[in-house]
Image 1: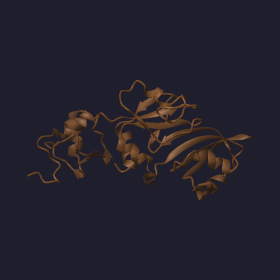
Image 2: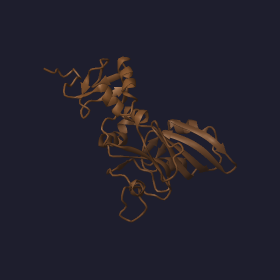
Image 3: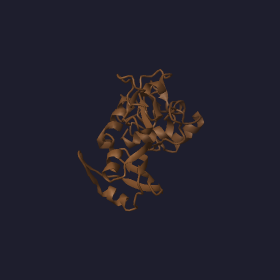
Image 4: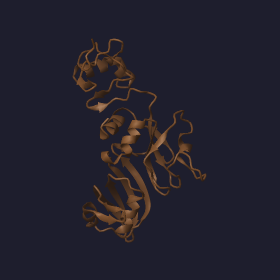
Length: 250
């Protein structure tokens, strides 16, 4: 009888074949990954090369990062342009996110929002569990924004923002704040925070007297906007996807 702590499934697929199919290298390279104790199946380290697993049910981690075995699931990074609303379909006919993924067969939904005037990184996925966890406040995934604001921002502002600023719907604290550039009448600042209340960065900077004139989200957890051009998408896969899943305990 197959005891529930034994990840081996006699009717399954060889583990090295599953890993190779998930893009972790050649079958030979995957055998070496297994033999060196870097692979766990359903929470147990597996070093034997003959182990077979059910790829539809097994939870596999390599170096502590989840491997996505279901190739029907896709997660994309999109650089949302200014003027686009964060919905897949807007009942008022405004430009929405669906135009950027019109060529994809999957039914994707967006994770979180950016207001129409804010640009930058937004995630689209058909992985319901991942989306649910990324949106859930208990996981507190860090988000990074680059903001152009009015006025010369004093260096001391970061400390104030880290201690917390009272807004009409409760206090907000930033996790990090860096002044990147200043001129006589404007500043470029980087704001890192883990909460997602509506227009939070704009409201925060308004409250401290430095209204935002341009706002770009550059990072969500381990996923960076990088050189992705406005209106373009890229697939999040491999280590990057594993790191994102780890952030939300998958």
